[in-house]
Image (cartoon, rainbow, N blue to C red; front, side, top):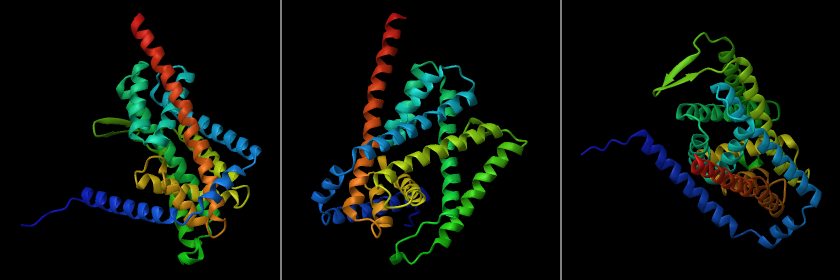
Length: 312
């Protein structure tokens, strides 16, 4: 009997296999780390450095919350801007730590629907938010890889030209998106029963500006915590690579993957205990602190909504 394997199953098997290899390498590596030195590195981080990193993280989360304001303009709904930004902040905090199905999608549907938005508009907001996030990533990665190609470890045997070529391709994609938004005569497509309207050129520029600023301020957090041991373009390039690796492996918060990428790309330039110390502080500042704030805001929104339902 012949068995036919579908491509989705092959992709899933490859993904699981690659994730298992990464997990094995992380466990093996963790056994060789001097965790006392790592703890000392965290404790030795200056207070002003931690405060600056916290401020940069706050700016990055604030900028991300503007993405749903673009969705507000895109769909034409009239929910208060403050509420829109609040929902966006809450969902992003949960998205970072628990994955996009929980935060980026599930929580958005729950909060927006309870605040009175129709499911069709919520779907369009989610779709545009994802496009905004990744089109900015593509443009920024294209610029960084083209203009500031990452110096890979010598043992890799790969020079910066491969990354520069990738950067050119990414830039071409981002420019094509802008051109499509500016000049396309077809402004609406139907995908799986959903109408997708092409954003205007001004809206596309806003998407790129918001997303690029968000990614740049996000990368500034670990760069600040590394205290100048690498230049900012290098820290930005490594974070962009770590972000896409975490998405491809479907690991919530990129847990372990982010650390593995930073160690693989920077351990030849920075002592590993200092690198891990900075990354632990980065997780606490950029992931866990917003999650705590987002959870408190979520409870506040739920309580207010239930009170309105009781008195309705």
